[in-house]
Length: 157
Image 1 (cartoon, rainbow, N blue to C red):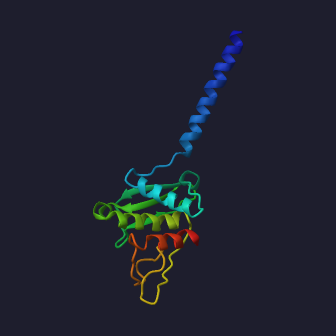
Image 2: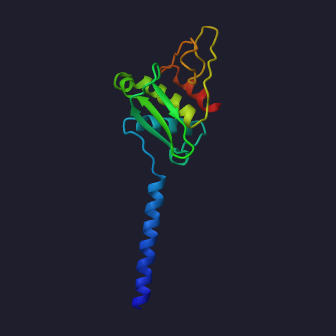
Image 3: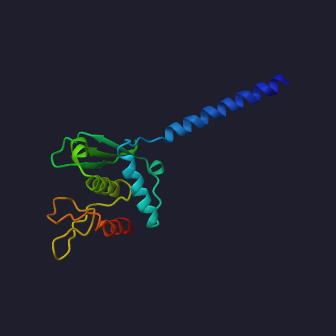
């Protein structure tokens, strides 16, 4: 009987250790200040039939200083470690909620949706995609009134 109890105890201990190791290896980091925007992105994707899973996609989110001039955010791809979405700390401290959302959604367009830049514009010179490069010269009109149109385009391509 003691041998059976010992076996059950050791089996349970090993199962717990393996489960914890698996959970730890699947964990990703998303800065708490970015989490609401990651959550919004997932919700907007779900509304449009896109399942967003940052753990399975291995995408993390950080707010750090970005050394490149005129770069407010970036998606760093990595074949071994999780991809890193990085928002420039100086920008983040002064940006409006809408500007933060635009930038996070744009960078998740790269990291999660695997979209490149799309510098198309309408007849008035307005950007037709949230994925514009910012150097194309089109007018970025992302706002509460244009948000749905931009997000439909983001998730449908």
